[in-house]
Image (tube, rainbow, N blue to C red; front, side):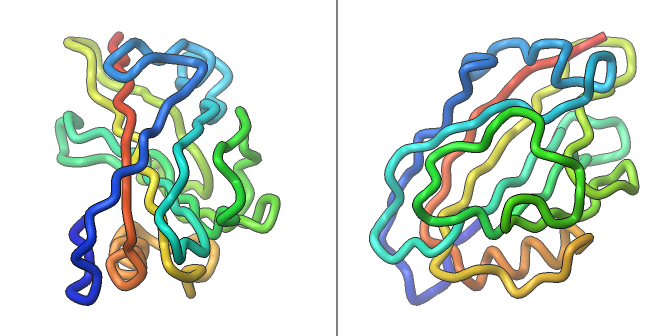
Length: 162
């Protein structure tokens, strides 16, 4: 995601998870082969002016092109983590969620075809406002809204294969 023209200051969020290390294997419980629940995530202090956070999980190694596993936004600015197993509802705890490429709202865990492990990139974006998106929004809508309010980002990458 590129910052909007008005914001040239670079700030980076460090994203981590108690469930897996950056570049490590995602535990089965957070995949479609397990409970298919979202993993816990946390991040560092955002830049001044942060009003909310958004989260994107994507698999850039999917055979059909980048596959979206999760779109989540309107996470409150004072929060520094997401709990495990965010409910897969359109609206959860003040937050809203979009449609993943499984055609469902909320998190859909890794389910790669047999072969080498895929990378699952969990991006966290710091934003200068809440996103004006309806629940169930698409990746395209999400990307456009994030671009308009982008302040900073960070990511953690988990691996999973079958």
